[in-house]
Image (cartoon, rainbow over all chains, first blue to last red; front, side):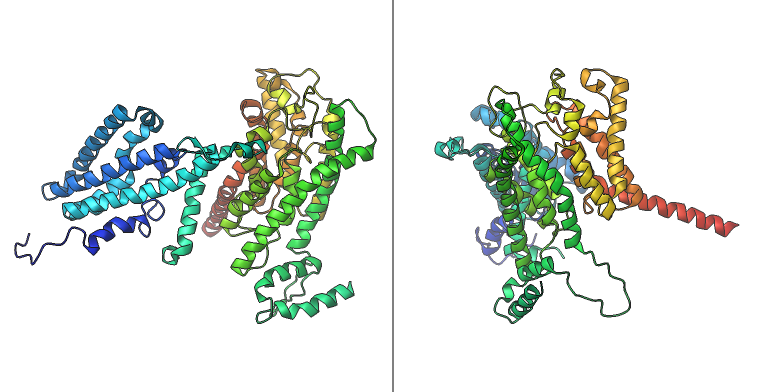
Length: 217
Length: 382
């Protein structure tokens, strides 16, 4: 580490803000890097579990990025994955216990998917690609940003799935009863996982329509 | 005819690049080539062109569907009045069904073609012909009482996600008509399965169960006679009930060479063989029904003749067509007998094999290459 550094970088410099915002669109973990799809399909039938899942993943990515970045110079490269996993697993268990304590019904809906955050590709990907070679603060921002990008897609998908699949948002009926009386029926396919995949597909379609640079040749 | 040709020629410049309506060129082109065989000729070299093109091919399939469709209309009326214990004359039956089915056909074509034209316009491509057939197939494979908005949604879904995202007609993995039906089946199960939906406005006390529905719960009393099932006097989706008229349509397709006899034949063979196997097993009453009865119940014949033979989504190689068809037959009967959630397996069997068709083709081609290589090596060593 060079000691003759000119001046400290401000906490929210343009570069750091970019770490937060680029995963929201151009570098989105789900729609561009296609990571973390499984949980996106599994927990998006309703908005509430999707939001809780988003928060959980955001905390785990942010904090694990921060911790691993602190440890990065002390981790022997050959066992780095194990060390990373220990950090992630600890955090996931903490989150899981917190959910069980304070949000038991949502925790039941999310079931194994909270535990499976450990294997979420986004987290391992960010640890390997970013936290291992960057300072703690940018690493933390990067983690939070990726969690947000993941959550953005999750919440969008959950919004459409809950609205059309159950006619509700946050379990409050949105589609008016008069429409049901006229013969409207909730779309049962929206509840099923395939429709989550198709909804993600539509988001990818729309995103690439506006960002031509993302289209693969 | 001549006047029409002249009229079209007069309008044409407006739609060519630089004309007033150049944005609508693909729409114009679609109607022009629909009415007249295009006069494009190969510019270089000598090539033989068949007069039959995609539009002519598709229209023959539509013609082959007409007997089953007309009978389906009559049957909708017949089943409706039967549930009230009435037996009006043929025309009353027919027109009751006609007014039930016509809106389905109109909705299907308007929504489907609307989306097709829109996509063609945006992409500056010619309008695809595929929907001419899908548009008539879809109303024939749904219950007569399906709400129109659900049908419209299903058609839109099938055209956009079953076809356009893959690049339009010829590129789709799944049969669009079956995609629409699968959408309805999973999205609105209340209107697509059970005993209530197969007869239009039936009397509540009248059982509307299809033979398949009855067979699945092991209710073989009052089972329709073989004659009724073959000629189609049973409740069911609009066009699927009469095996006899579907076979006539199949004959038209075979004579004109539009559909592959290999696929058609092997689907029936597959269903029959699976039925025989179940006969041998015979663990319950459903397994015990004569194997050939599977072929005349439900949508088996319709699927075999009009769906499995779809040239885009079926296997392309001749040998592959046998495997493809045979597996469809087997899967359809398997799903019917074993899965209580799905009384009819034909739709799912065809969609499943649609996915496997390219794989089947791949292995057929690979094995052919291997065989020829072996022969070439033999020739070298000799």
